[in-house]
Length: 416
Image (tube, rainbow, N blue to C red; front, top):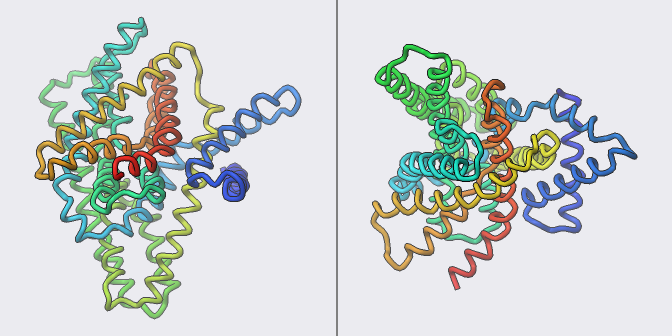
């Protein structure tokens, strides 16, 4: 795996240089487009230069789902949340909570129901519970994609925090919903004696352990590690090592004790970032910690979006998958508008800003690597896995390239 990772890192570095020198696109979008172009050229040149099979082996060795969910995700979530202002977050807590919980549930149901109806209409066998499973993995907005694109778009601070906060927290909620639906599928496929009541209790217990447990663990972890850092402010290098230990050890330990690692990293990052910004904390130590985490964020973002572009080599293709994938883009967008509008209607806000806010929240709800990783993590014996993986990949490409490139122009148009 190490050799494969080195190869991908080298490709990401080269493509980053090309994008910076010539394309000048937002880094994440530019890298993914270049990776897609690179993959296409490799496939087309296979009869002359047999690189395609070699690249497939590299990607298989890396194991995208494991590398992202058990490796890079902890660093990316911590790096993204360390810059969130907790005072500003408190002002938006109601909207973020509703978008990250009610919004995910509404979207899961809408996407699942509409995909099921569409699949029946065009003659594709897609069981309803599998459609809901797809809805659960595609509904949460990806914090990695969202935070990367928001750096380029000029949205208001309040709206930026709504989008960023939702994406950071709905990731953990989405994983819990996804896992809960998988439990239901397993129970039915194995003709389990689980009653509806026992399944409901099991899913509720899963939510409490994963979501609530992840938040509590993140707070405790941040509190403990910051106390250590606060006692050695004069040694920035050791302080940096301690923050790295949070992303490495904290995420792993969260998984071992059965709580949400993503939520734990988000909460820890927010807590640590705000403590580090305290005026009494060493400015030199704070600057060095921020610099190293900005570098880590850039490196892992580059690797992730190059991997997403290269994954086209491993995505199973059938024409009916393509038809359903293209039509599903519209379903996901419609569901996003509705799942944003309903929670937003429950909040106090300025009426004149409603249309603009819902438009930006809807179009800025990007999907990314986490959705692909969840799709790839599905059991091999799930009959619809290949179809779910293809549809997910199609939506992610559209989301990052089309929505990502047009989010800035949309914001400028709505603000004009």
